[in-house]
Length: 312
Image 1 (cartoon, rainbow, N blue to C red):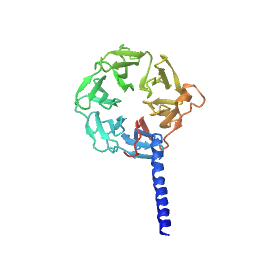
Image 2 (image 1 turned 180 degrees about the horizontal axis):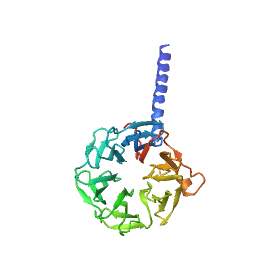
Image 3 (image 1 turned 30 degrees about the horizontal axis):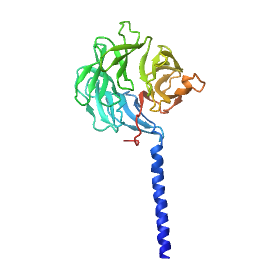
Image 4 (image 1 turned 180 degrees about the vertical axis):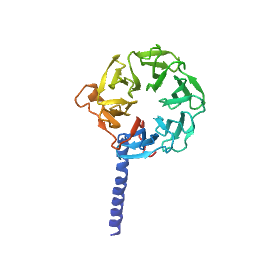
């Protein structure tokens, strides 16, 4: 009887161990948790704060709680920190916080307004816009050294910086030809050489994770999402929808979806998602899915780059 009990206990223990280990092994192969970072205003005062939303769990948590405006957030490549813009100390400046919104600090002191912080793919630099007198320049902040370098001049209008995924260049919108027709340019980090990507009215460019496609916003009265194929060197309409304004779109980490915030013709405002393959093929399945349901002003959604437990 004793031997039987020992064998029974051993088998039960083995089963219990497998019950614990199998989900852990499966968990390692699960796809990344779909989590959005965005700014939003849920009240009549219209101040913006930053939020995180887990798509799987349908949970939204506030990252910042401030009577000032906190907006234009961007994830660090490891998903552990965020950079954002705030006017909590006067002018618009860049701040850093951990992913939960703790340990907030101003990145550096500067008298000019700063906008559009974007982390380099290796996490070593932040590119941003410094603005003064209606003009803006693309700047580069070294996270380790605490130094700042200019990637462009600052006496024209340069806006909307975004890193190419290989980390070798920063793409931006500019009126370098002095006729403000919003051409898209690229500045090489090593050489500082500026090259046009293509000519045409465009704003808010963002690269696909593989670096092949550049999505951007085109149009004034009627807003389209257009896409530049950097391999074929041509631009086409990606999606023509019912929205009249929107801001910087975002690619999911796997490159399969596009997310954007927009005002629609019927007056709704929210965050929406599009299937990339269907829209590239101009398929009838290129239909936006609403990711938000609560009425609010939503801005600048960004997908989390790496899988981390929600709230970390």
